[in-house]
Image (cartoon, rainbow, N blue to C red; front, top):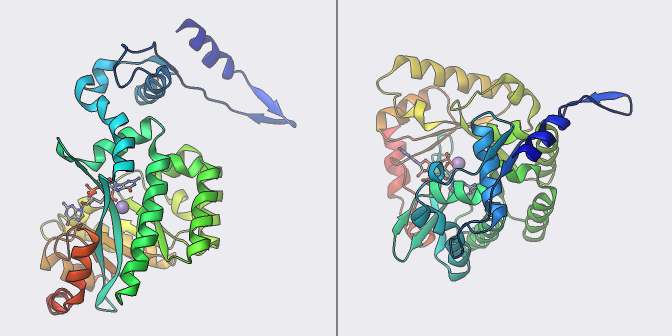
Length: 334
Ligand code: G
Ligand code: G
Ligand code: MN
């Protein structure tokens, strides 16, 4: 701990590169080897989590706190199981439709990862994706998701359904140039029509590199969507700097749309702001016909939520879209 504190301290000393002052902030995580046989025996995994724990506590140095991390016998074993699950086909993508108000039809889907664990049944993506991020396993998961989404898009298009597929990209991957190379190569080779959903916090971690990578995605024809907008800080600097095509208003504002005039005002002004910047707007969390009608009246471009469709396996989606029922019902409701 003392050595780590010394390092973090030393990193704070003013540094000049080519005459320009450079600020460095270093966060250190310290961990000892875990008990043999434990799934988090690797000191590197434990230290990676300790770095997150130190950051969350706004400290420069922190020791791995196993108790704070959760039940080791339960959650921690998931990390190693996850990589096996990916190979064994236990991880799948569910697709949730996005309804285009003007076209009056489903024009896209969001791919959402699901893990059907043989013993635990349902493992929340919030849990396993969060853990994959913390332990540096989000990259293989995301690479798998991109390949799967591209293959599934081809299947849908062969069934006569041309849909843009949105894939969620974790913030950490926006400072990983070799991940970006992978994604660009996959898209170039397949000619897929993808959208990458990213969140604001993703960009804040390493803004310069993230913005450069996002610009490369945009140049390669990958649409960029700002996910969960409004849930974080939602700074105007972020909107000003980023090359995006779409803004997704966080579901927390849409769920209360029918009851709260404040939410309605915020949603309406966010739609207008996005439009004036040339962004399309998707509202997520549309659960009621009233919300759908309000959003249409506000000039919102796309709606996503349980009213339109839940995230479902590819086969179910293809079946639902084959019948005209969903779309005509929505057009009537709006
Ligand atoms: O349906 P839902 O419970 O799927 O998703 C929970 C959270 O997990 C959401 O914030 C969603 O963005 C995220 N998520 C779902 N699938 C993926 C994925 O493939 N990659 C990443 N990074 N996040 C995902
Ligand atoms: O963070 P992101 O926006 O990618 O996550 C999408 C999440 O929202 C997923 O967990 C998905 O299952 C959930 N979701 C999608 N539609 C609805 C909805 O209409 N209501 C609610 N409560 N959640 C939704
Ligand atoms: Mn999303």
